[in-house]
Amino acid sequence: MKNRLCWLLAFVTVTLLLTGLVRAQRTAVAKQTWDYKVILRQRDIEFEARNRYFAKPWGVWSEDGKALAPPVDITAKLAQLGGQGWELVTVCPRSDNGHSNPGGAGNGQDYGLYSLNGVTTEDVWIFKRPQP
Image 1 (cartoon, rainbow, N blue to C red):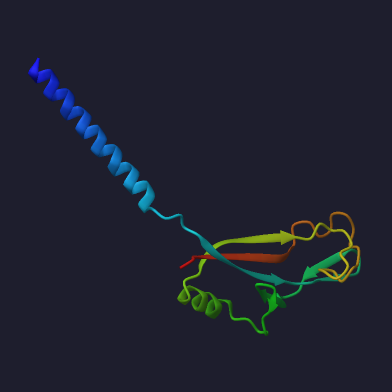
Image 2 (cartoon, rainbow, N blue to C red):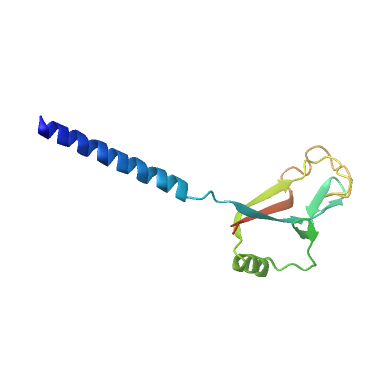
């Protein structure tokens, strides 16, 4: 009978200690929060005769909504951001849908329903770093 009581007390003691350790670990881990940065690059589409088109070089760059002065050296920019603790999370290409797009790629011209599908006219580069 004493053995069973000792085992029961030992079991309860160990269980309480482990429960306390798990709770302490849960409260000790702080929730990570992040800062984000967005780089956007854009280019226009040049229209030629007979519904032919070609993509112009990347001409417009912005960082967090502010224009970057051309020319942009993306290799140097990535090194600069990496040195500041920014990690590139994703690059999301966007394609023109082929419809008239005033103020955007194609300068508002309508190139036909399918003529521009698949042409990347914009890239969104998303970075993150831990908040202090």
